Length: 364
Image (cartoon, rainbow, N blue to C red; front, top):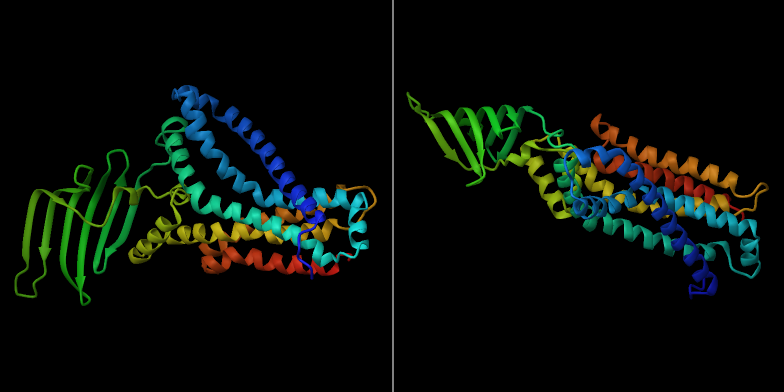
């Protein structure tokens, strides 16, 4: 197969990339307009500066939604311009010139690769940073304090052999109630620190324990007991650990996300499922560009009576089912049926098989 670029390759690549980004920009403009109409009352109520609205919120808002809609618009783009090429007998002319259907797919795959890399760069480098700015803006000007509620019955392993228990945590004053720290060695409890409250102190990035009680289990006839009104301590537990939200994950770089996963695994934190889902989602979403491109070409390369409406209808239906399946697959993780990696990649595996079948039966 001759892979040397031809004029037809440049023509298809130009059509694909241009149509994709124009369609994406149009939908982003529409989404921004609807978002402004929804949040304008909050902007006025909390006196958000115009500069902050534009640069801190909407400039950070755009990459997030570009990536969210990219999979859908890859498919719609391919269906749209390939159906038009088929309706204008351009595909018949291409195949009649001795270019095989497989060779015609090369510029499509190249364009899908460009979009997949674009999506991957957004997921790994741009969106985490933009989400930080967007979350800070929302917490200050959209709905301050709404996402912060009391956290109850927190159990963490903060280090090998060190376990923390907090009955409840108040985000209003960064205070943990009924705080307990236990140290275990060789399956034996060696120390237990209890306090009525533990207040986060940002001046030394530690906790101030009030009305504390320490018991050291020495193995002798009598244990060593200490108590007091106040004790400052630094442990591997930060106040941010109590503010866990989905948006927090989306604001982490890939390195930070991996570090969080290791910490949560050490602690036995059930929220590690969310972190693993976020990690696998960043890659699986980018891979979808290849699947949807192949499906789109296979469905729309045949000239149909009635124009491109039938192709668009089938294409939108398949793309929505694929995206819906991607979202639904997360439930397999929470129910314990699948690991996060398997669950997030299962839609890609299934729709790769569907794409292969459609490609096989496509008219060539």
